[in-house]
Image 1 (cartoon, one colour):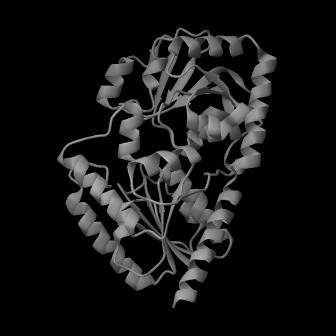
Image 2 (image 1 turned 120 degrees about the vertical axis):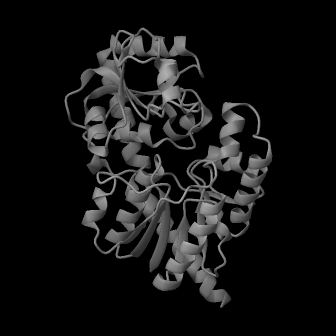
Image 3 (image 1 turned 90 degrees about the vertical axis):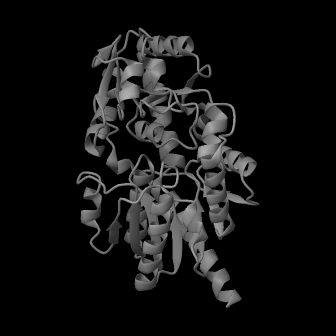
Length: 364
């Protein structure tokens, strides 16, 4: 079996891609990987050094949600078709909607990691409008129309996605991470960790700005000018330490030492960062939104939705209750191992690939 996988190097999709490609290669599947959105840093692509059999094509073509991306999408589609013609894969696994519209008879799996319309409706309470929004919706819908199957990382995302687009069936395959990439046995220290792009309204990292908790909070993530203005310009603000962007090893080390992980997101189709924290045996404190409830059930503690005072109360309560903190760290760890392993995710995708290829062979 030969699978062509597309990815982007912005955010969690690259981590997802690492698990998928590594798992496929370990099972003897030939993989051709094409990434968009920017050439990855050396530390981002280090994992590929252990997979010399994977053909990798990094590109800087803009992604479909980026400004002024129209020409890049045309050029990247042509580039992708050339790679398909040369490498001759059996199936396409696409992390961008637009490539579902590629002119090819190959089966196409399109994954809805996140989406502009669902983000806007949750975060801003309305769908985006205007010429660009019209173009974006048409681009996504064209890709969905060409897909053999559409995958979402949670039931919540599948339902929201069906409300925004015409897609009859969305299959749910939960994301997974390898526990070997994280340290669940390091001695915990008296601080909480969080991660999120400071400019992303959906992550709501600004909620941490003035909590005044007894326990310091270390925040990892991109700090754009607007995000830094929102949080403040000092490196430490009322117990909040801004770490900036961290590499994978640095993030793993931070989570290994953190006693608690805080997720303030109001839009989270799955949430890889809480999963990584759980595999580091952090107690999870999560915004009480449907997707995070679906993923974590009673393996996490929740604060009232978007309520900073409630978040502070939960964190202060955990700070003074070591036994409960350790119990919830263990709950999160065991829930993650049981439900969101990379191996389970890869096996589900392999079953889907086999079904699609058998269906194609039967129709031939």
